[in-house]
Length: 354
Ligand SMILES: Nc1ncnc2c1ncn2[C@@H]1O[C@H](COP(=O)(O)OP(=O)(O)O)[C@@H](O)[C@H]1O
Ligand SMILES: [Mg+2]
Image (cartoon, rainbow, N blue to C red):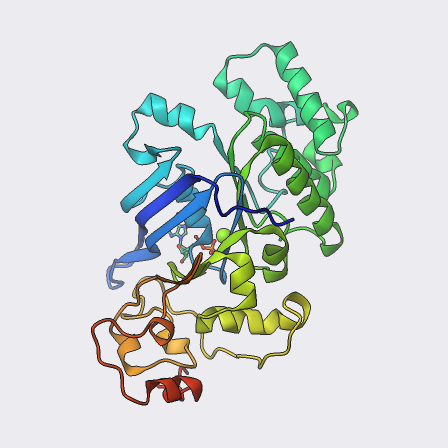
C-alpha cells in the first residue's frame, strides 16, 4: 500500500558514496584493479517509507544496501543515519546505532545456521547483546514466532524442518528481534516459489505498519517494486540513473534504461502498450566502466557527448530525478538547433556491441 511520504523527515541519506573492491588478481599477468561496485551515489530515504532499489544482477544493489547499514565501509562519501555520520562514530556508538539497522537476506536456505534450533537462531542477536536472561529471550522469540505466522511449537525445530517460505519467516523474525527502525530487505522473495511471494510481502507490510519500520527493498522484479515501494532508485553499473517517487517513475519513466527495464514488463506492471526496447550487449565490467554515461554503449538513444560527459542527477519534476543528457540537456554545451526534433526522432544507435 502506498503511503503519503512527501512530508516525512529523512532517516538515512547518502552523500557521494562510492564502494570499490580490490580485484584479487592471482596471476602476475592479470592487471590488478578495482571493482567500482557503487559510484558516487547520493540519496535520501524518508522515515516510514519503502525505498526500492532495482537493477540487473551485479549493478551494486547489495553493496549499496550493505553500505547503508554499516556492513561495508564506503571508499568515499558519507552515510547519515538519524543525523549521525555512521562511519565517523566511535566503536561503541557504531555498535549501538547499528542495532537499529538490520537486513533480511535473499536466501533463507543458506542464511540460517542448520545446526541451530529456531530458538537459538532467532534469539542470537539478543544473546550477542547479552542484556537479557533466558526467560525474557524465550518470551520475545515466541512473540515474534506468532507475529510471523509460526508458533511456540516450533521453538526447538531445526531449519531443515521448514519450507522455504517458513524459513524466510524465521529470517524475518530474527531480523526484527532487536526492534530495528531500518530494515534492508535484499531480494526477500527471489529464492521462493512464486506462489508464496504474496504471503511474505504481506507479512513484511504488516510488520512495517506495526513496528513503524523504514524499508529498503532490493529487487530485480519491477512488479514487486511497484506494489511495495513509495520511492525507488534505478541502478546501472554502480550508479543511480533515475530516482524519486515510484508512482511518478512508473507513470513516466524518463531514463532510456528505466524505459527498457519497464518495456519488458509493461503489460503486467504498467498496463499500457509501449514498444519493447531490447538492449544489445551485456552489462560492461565494473572494473573499467565506460566513461561519460555508464549506459551509453547500450543506450538506444545515445548521443556523441554521452560517451564523455557523465550526466548529473537533476530533479525534472517534483520528487523525480534523472541522470540523462537526453532529458536534462548537456551542461554548458550548446545543443543543436534541431535538438528537439532529434530527440523526438530517437537518433540511431551510435555504437553497437558485439
Ligand atoms: N566482497 C566483494 N568483493 C569483491 N567484489 C565484490 C564484492 N561484493 C560485490 N562485488 C562485486 O561488486 C559488483 C556489485 O555486486 P552486488 O552489489 O552484489 O550487485 P547486485 O546485488 O546488484 O547483484 C559485482 O561486480 C560484484 O562482483
Ligand atoms: Mg544482490
